[in-house]
Image 1 (tube, rainbow, N blue to C red):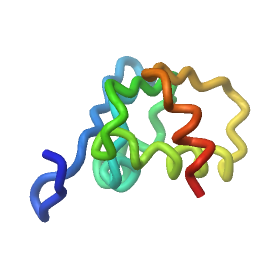
Image 2: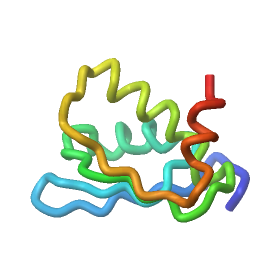
Image 3: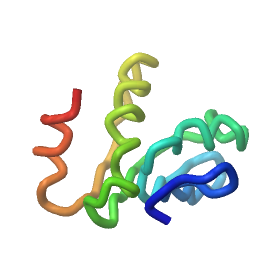
Amino acid sequence: GAMPTPTRHLSGTLVRRENRGVLMDCGEGTQLQLVRGGLTRVRLDAVCITHLHGDHVYGLPGLLSTLAMLERTAPLTVVAPAGLRAFLDAAP
């Protein structure tokens, strides 16, 4: 859904295997849901954004900021439609 409720959150699905993960979409609140699910120690290898609707991408600037604050040096693959770089450049 495009609007969060107390029992439903925006798009963001972590696919993990052997402590490695790929995040499919990153709606607002994705980081909080990862914390709630105890998934913050999963090594995030890639983020795949399916399309540039806000409910699929508005959490990405915050996630990238958090990774920078954690001084992540490992590369992060981001797969997304054209236009993501412009979106990220415009994000505060």
